[in-house]
Image 1: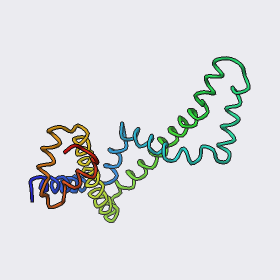
Image 2: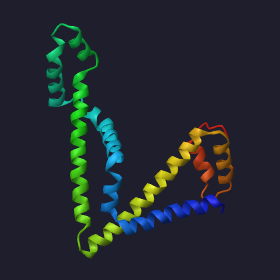
Image 3: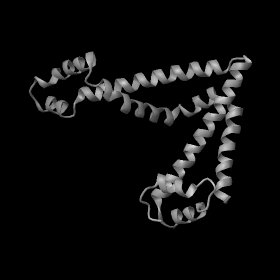
Length: 182
């Protein structure tokens, strides 16, 4: 085992330990507030928003909304049509709804996880351990990706230190950074 293998084991064990100490409810609240919550909202809107964009009453509502300026003359109304203001408003409303739903769901999960019931507490700690181990691993993968983007001697030296890894971290680096100049 190379040093990178021990670091990977330390990252996973650290995530497990912190997850057991913090719990799932508190960890979920931490990882979904602030900038993380904003990013989650954008990703959910991008993934879910296009599904409902042209369907059913939402499509009808957007066409009626767009008709407010498509039938009028003037540069401002032309501008609203060119930028598809109805789609902009749709995504803003969807983002606000996603944020409200996220806050409610996280609040409910956090409230349940604070229960004094031994089964709930054990489940909270177990899910917390898994959640934090996954989050720490994802952050480590992001660091590897960023180093691959940076490239140069930093990426080459890191790749060389990963070579011979028991967990095949060198192959992992190659997969998350396809085409890097090593």
